[in-house]
Structure formats: C-alpha cells, structure tokens
Image (cartoon, rainbow, N blue to C red; front, top):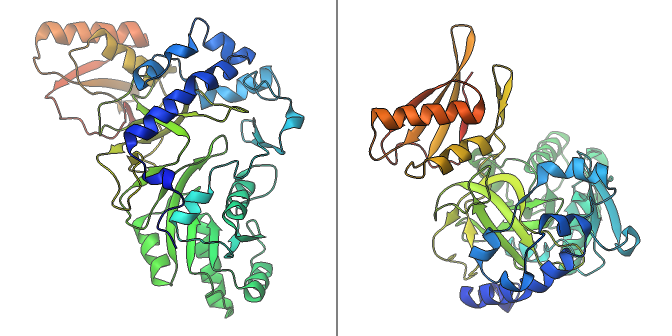
Length: 407
C-alpha cells in the first residue's frame, strides 16, 4: 500500500505552482462569462494572471457577501454560467447560501483527506454529518465512496439506532464532528454497546482541542482533522506526522491581511482566501473569514503542498463602538495611509460607562507628530475619536486579530 493517495501529492512545489497557474487563465475566462464575475473582474486580462502576484491584484469575494448576492440573483448570485439542472445535487447553507454539487467523481476533493487519515478501499465508514439540505453529509459520503469505501449514511442523532448499525456492519471508520464522536463513545459505554470496530476518524466542523484529542486516542480511535467549507469541500487536512494541515490539490490558497486582499508576510496569521480550478463552478479569491498561518517547509509525510497551522479563529472582527460599526477594513486602511507602521490592533474597552478605543500600532520611530497623525487618521477613517499607543516592532501578537473587543 502506498503512503500517498497519488503522485501529485509529492511533486515538486515549483511544478505544482506552474501547473496551477497555467490552468488559471482559462478558468478565469470561463468565470468571466458569468455576469457577477464579469462585473467584478472588469478590465482584467485573464492571460496575464499567471502568478501569485498577479492573482493578488484581483479583488476578493467575501463569503459574508454571498447571502445578499444570492438573494439578489438566485440561486448562485450570478457567479455560475451553468444551469442548476446541470449539477448533481443542490444545497443550501445558513445565510442562505446556495451550493451546487458537481457530477464529477469526488466533487468535494475529500478522498485524499480520508486516505491521509488512514481510510482505505473496502473500509466501512459511519458518516454522521447531516444529509438534510446542507452539503456536509454528501461531502464526506462522496469522498469516501470515491476512495472505494462503503458508507453508512447515519447523519447526527438517533444514537440507539446507530448502535444497531455499528454492531451489524462493524465500520472501521467514522466521519463527523468530534463532539458527536464523544457522544457516541460515552453513550455506548453507558449502555454497554460495542462500537469498538471504529478505529479511525476524520473529524471536522467543530473545535477539536488537545484534551478531547487525547481522550479519543485513549479510547482506541486515531482521529485526524480536516478543514473545509460547504462552498469548496475539503481544503486542507492532517496527515500521520501531525505537522499541521496540508493544502488540498487543485486549489490556490492565499493568506491575506484581514479586511484586505493583500498577502501577509510568510508565517503571519491572516485570512484564508481560496481560488479553485473547477471550470464548472470556479471560485476566484473567495475570502472565507477564517484565520490561519502558513508553516515553513514541507511536511515530513512527503506531501509537498503548502502547509497551514489549521483553523485559528475568525477574521471578521467587526464590532460596534458608540453605536457605530468598526471593521477590519478600516484598520487596514489606516495601515495603508501610514506604511511605516507594522501590525495594528484596535482595542475596544469600557471607560466609566462609555465605550473607548485605543489603536495600538507597531512603530520603529515613534514621535509626537506621528502619534497625532495616526490619531487624526483613526478619527477620519472610523468617524470616532480614540487613543493611540505606539509600541515597539514585534510587540503585538501574531494572531491575525486587528480588533480586540475587551468589553
């Protein structure tokens, strides 16, 4: 049995980059046939977008925008040229956001994530993600079947009935949230039911803290994490060496400063932006609102694609101060107006019985004039007065947070 799903996972990164960006112009041409992309990418020459620098010059599409866009132009916001009937399944997620499933094999790109977690052809998998209207259950179902596994479409809940299925079919694998896996294990122990056939798991959709990881491991299950969304399917996944998450094939991931489309410095925490190369339903610089950071070098597992730390929180840190919204984009604008500054963080507190905010800014050469200039920019951009605190370079944590609401 090979250690990798296919040879594409271990090709040189330069080869992968060249192949991705050789495909991107044609994907862009197809995307721009859709009215929404035609408007957003007006004036762009697809033939010129053959590098990360060129891609970074395109506007981001924020996932938070999709509900309003989908409502205005149902069902897919004008981002898809194909008719809804050309897809295999049609879903909705909270928002609502409408998501189609393609007809191709493994449409959500999850088979290699399951393989990395130890799943193999002919395994039986208990899939407890929901099959009701949202794509979660079908993402993992299609991925497992593409790998050659048999799937028990259990969904969440109905624990007693799940025990009957587990004892009859003896699944070796589990896919679902880590929380529901613990519920199954605890309920089986209480009821004296045998679910010991489950030896490995691919979990997603909820936090999987080290304490729960250790508990699941102690109960005989080797569980791995995957990061995905209802729009894109599986984006990154853990491998057996546990050195971060490897980005999936056929995706271009960028990590940008929250509120902007500007790539962060290597290793800095920022917002995940993904471009997919699915010609039937491409995503061009979809900003997910999730934070992560790239890890240096390649994984010890032999996979050569970009590695990330995993999910590190949400980039959408919008808050309300004195009745007015303050957004990460505004903090980014302050940084653009003062390019000598390093990281910025707006700290919102209560002073007496009123909201108060202080902009902390990394500055190598602080001065009273610089302090006053930044205070003026803060007021001009946010329409609110606030304090300014200039700190040494490197003093602010590298966690992607630009607004800290400490009220």
